[in-house]
Length: 314
Length: 261
Image (cartoon, rainbow over all chains, first blue to last red; front, side):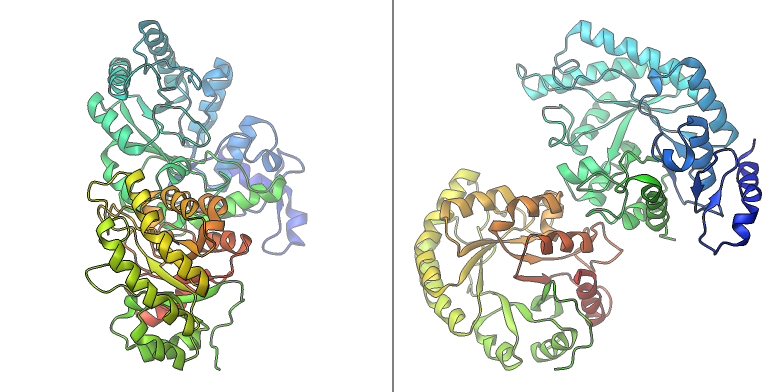
């Protein structure tokens, strides 16, 4: 079923309810009984914001394909799924098919096992490096299967036994080898600096540091994922920092601070941050890697409304 | 008194004089009063009479004659004697004018590490604190960014300023948490305020980047920050310290409304 038909059928199915309803009344979607959402007209977002599975499960139901249809109906043009690699081949294909039918872009998935508590890539250990490269190789297959261009890489925990310069060199060497695997397929690993507060002890923490690593790797397959939530905690100064690192940034993730929920719930003025990213000519994906500030259907509707508001810069 | 803005009364509004340098202080006072602003920031003692004439408060007094100021202040041991004399005279003046806060600075690092800077500042400020306590006037150190506006300034991180407060250990020594400067240096504004509010005695605003209007043209969501400030039980002033790009008084009014949560 095409997206437009999905929405149209929903409207038809709810004809009687609609007749008695005011402008903002919810509509009942036929294929997801009992689920309502407020979006009569598909919203035309200026950028590719990518929701996650589960974000709209109250409105769209537990079925992943229904959730994708719902996202498309709202007007989202992308979706990201950190755990894609762990899904069955059949499910990966099903998701990818639905998304290509709906003309949605695939966002990041996590490309490899992240070492949260012990060093892997920073140590320079050959076995660890081999394990990483094997997983990158596997991720190429997943990326091709799901039409993904970007996959998230987190270089893991620091190695307390090595000076930081050696750790950087070890990480760069692993990423160079990984780039060799990715380049022929035009797949890009995006390095995500994480904040020290939620993730203490990780090697990659700051955008300038990720910039240095990317420049040293020197590959179109090694870029930065600028997660604005993490960077607001670690560095602030979001717009000037992204400008400085712009030619290495390939992907954004979103989350307001504090709380890591949708825009409008914290201290970041996403309206202007999005405007800036748009004016820079960004055509990639901005992953909605955050929670819903309010539970239930109302909370899910609030997320949609927050994105409409934050996207209303032109 | 005529109040044009329907303010909620949760935030006590102030405005920094230097951002409106083309407007005579008298005019600024009149216009500020109309907006419901209660205070003008960074006023020198020779201007106290003007402020008082309009029954306005001065949320933050500036009283440092050259060569002392942002770049040259308490982290330099050689300055301590002169600074003591300045504050010894200033504090009673501030008190008798009915004002509460006087600004101070660390000065530039000039090669001093964090620890040396803390030690020097504390040793210069401690003798002044007994006078401040006697008159119940607050000495308030300003956090500034050292990346864009004030290269090499030492008091450029909240944790450093909090360390200094702990060393001085006086209820009359506080931090001026400048939201603009700290967004440039640190980010994480609301969490930082929630953690450190007992040490914070004053707030300044400004849009990032650019230090202009605090509206939709910059990256901070000021109402959310103001909500967090109100929830800490803060009773002091929030002073607008942005450089208006548009009509200055219209922008000021807009800034007040944005912060009036």
